[in-house]
Length: 139
Image 1 (tube, rainbow, N blue to C red):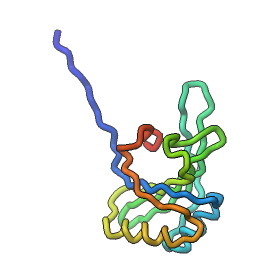
Image 2 (image 1 turned 30 degrees about the vertical axis):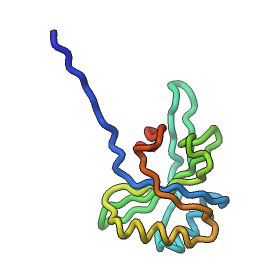
Image 3 (image 1 turned 180 degrees about the vertical axis):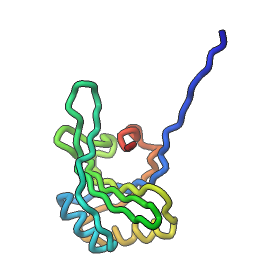
Image 4 (image 1 turned 90 degrees about the vertical axis):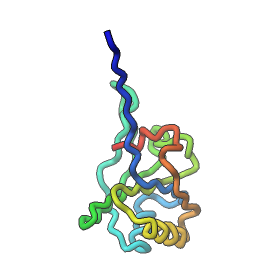
């Protein structure tokens, strides 16, 4: 009897930017909206179910869409009431996730403009493949 082995690769096709800021999520998004001319809006919290039967971990989430290019932006809190979304990046307060097509030149512009915001202490692009708990970012 022959065996077939099923292998798959996770789709980590998004840009991830780590933000460190002492601001509350709504104040951070206000400053990002002002600097980047975006319109981040609060949506339902991102729920991460870790164990069957246990309460899912919840993280604050804001969304902005560019309909013409189908680009989606998310600001997600790294810290929730019951822990961290990405524990190995515990000093990071928020993540800016960009899904779908985004130009490298535009990305550099976003990074530079985020660094201009006085209330953001650090801005760092992170390769999602290098994060141990990258599965927590798949939704």
